[in-house]
Image (cartoon, rainbow, N blue to C red; front, side, top):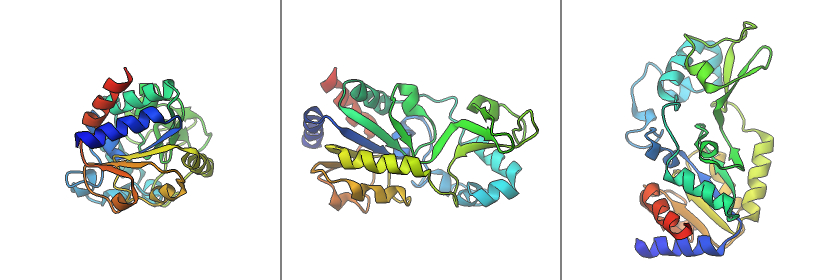
Length: 243
């Protein structure tokens, strides 16, 4: 394992256009639950499956039940970025990392100091009135009683991509451009089970693709370096190298 981490550190030092593609596993070490692991949200018991609760039609038809789940399970306001977020921000400041592409909606990368973050699934930090389009922060939504509403009377919707909704076209195009330009592509904390996010890896043309994940994925064989270990442990080692 140490040999693999040393290889990763060497590749990072030799690269100047690193792109990091992260999933839920990047934030679990901040204390958040992921979705698909055996103790994730999708294996908890609710009146409706989480995939249905987090769908567009459910939000529109059962807004109150949507917000009960959303406020209970997706409120990250009491949590903070972890070592992975902080080291990525440091690598960007050094001119090594060009962008972070994330499937997460917690906004931790920006909280840690990263500037060029492409949020494939939106962010809980942005919420908008469906009537007048005014924006509200997460505190307004999570501190509200029941369904959060705008002073104009409109219902507020989180600026996150729900099931049945398409990804933002501009974000998708920027994501593809970044991956194509990368000289080191690091995929971390994701099972690569969500489409179309998983399909983005085919746009990488470089020679060094790294996959860091606790469990095996269907894409392990495609990568030049695969590490099955804790992201926190790995990024603590990387931090030592760049101090």
